[in-house]
Image (tube, rainbow, N blue to C red; front, side, top):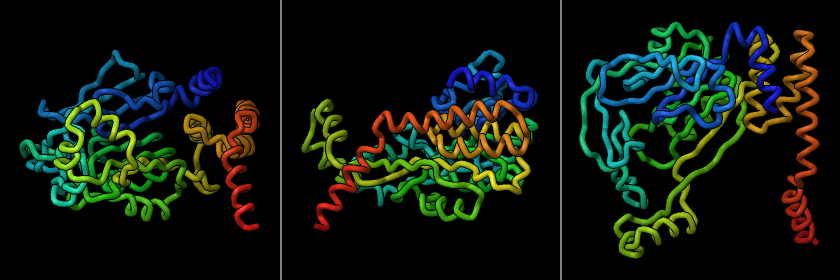
Length: 321
């Protein structure tokens, strides 16, 4: 796989137009999934803090080019917007935490408001315009409640050409007026994307004071949190562009689409893209990619990935007897 990554990223179309990766709430580092391609990519990260409102271009980084915006990114520009600083910096948001709804969950104290600051915000589209960015290939947002409105803030032509997008929406009411999982699913079903992966995350459904009283020792508390069944609270959901026939994608997008699918372990769709890519562009590299995807699908048999499903089918048939 590493050899094919190098071949793809050294293809003339990719060198001329390197992958563009957007990571909202990067927390000081580029998304681990992108480690294999970051050094060949233009990376735009958003890390909100109280420093000067500008972007910084870092020449020496793990990316071909890295821009870090030290500001609050939103779906609109504002000279004075509320930003809620919470006990956990990972829960701070432009949206007010819904403390009343959260009180039934063990992680509620993380959302307690430490202070509210007034700050300028920049819309995502304007931030990209300032950088003269005209495309996004991989879009990742963990914006604490506004993932969908950030994605919708992109102009339609740019949004339609995104190859892969990741959101981390809430399921419960963690913030007032937040973009929830069902809203993202409803919107994306009308766009040219399909769900590649969804992971449901959660925490124990118990008031924090009761939980702390029952398990006062910190080490025990951590073990219990990892052991008892959680209540779903948020999700990590990934969408991949459907690459419909009328999308006008170039060979560059097909190559990156294949690569992103492999990084997501979606080898069946990667196989389809390789075949379509060869038919459209007659580039021999797509034949190599096709063979690799086919081999990876065969390897799933060797790894016995079919076994859990086969066992479930056998149990189901016995129950019907």
